[in-house]
Image 1 (tube, helix red, strand yellow):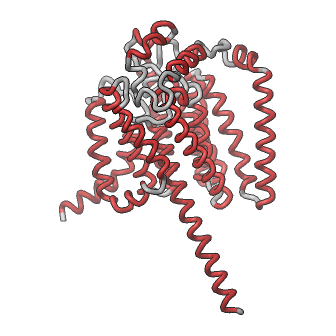
Image 2 (image 1 turned 135 degrees about the vertical axis):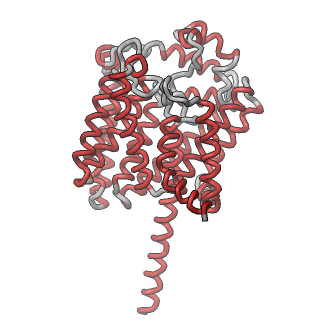
Image 3 (image 1 turned 90 degrees about the vertical axis):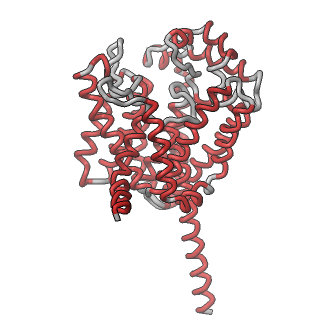
Length: 423
């Protein structure tokens, strides 16, 4: 009896603990006054995840087989220890990648899309609310040396990234749920303010993209012909915007973003990284095996990456595709692009059928996940909450697509049966 009560209590606390670990995996900076260590959090997360999976192991096994392509990508990631240029790092970090992946699968197993939205809403809300006093009361902790807010995170970009995705969710909620409109708008306002205080210009541009997509979601709820027209218009607008950006790239980069034409030194790093990757093009240097090995020394010593080396921080290419190419080669990048394309196809298939807040938010979040990896994020496949979110989206949409097809199949069979009886 006592064990059942304890288990019931743990299940009640489960969403709270999940939000806590999602916060930690988003590079939460542990305040000096908290008696916590990164090692203790990691150990606790493995134990907690094991208990969660054991509690729903039958359904978990079913769900994890819904996306074979993603499993193949993870299998290659784990196997990369056999050809890694830094096997000791690959061994450690692939465990964390496996944990993050299983965490994402569990979210898809245990929670509906609506429940997942609530979990991430709490994550974004708590992060925003804690970042304000962290920066005002403890400026040495919440504000970096250049006066840019980072809140409760280790870097300003992590705060800006979370607030960008959160703002899109808050605005969608305000758009569709009148009951919580003012609370959602307050959350969106706070998120925008934190993005401005972080002084992340790339986050500001992605925020504008995120907010501009929200009103278009109303159109997708219309009939089929209007949906086709909508997709054509979006494609045309995207083409025009791309042409305008490419023709005015120097003005945008230099005058608007305040960067030089090599994106603050990123382009030389990208070029050198690609050259290094071409030495081992098919399977790469292994997961976390390039920047931790001697293969990266030339780049680290001959570009601004030397700053990170002096600070003993792990460097990355500031482009998720290039980092993935360095780690898993053409094979890994190809599998990931195919999988990403499949996720977008599932989203475009589901949104007209299930035009809910959750469907639109999944599309916006997946798009932001890709866009952030073009210049800021470490890598697509990782041990961070962005990867957890992507995995949960992948498996949730796969499950939803299966359910929709089964319903459509049963409806078709019923119609055929009714027609047969009538005849």
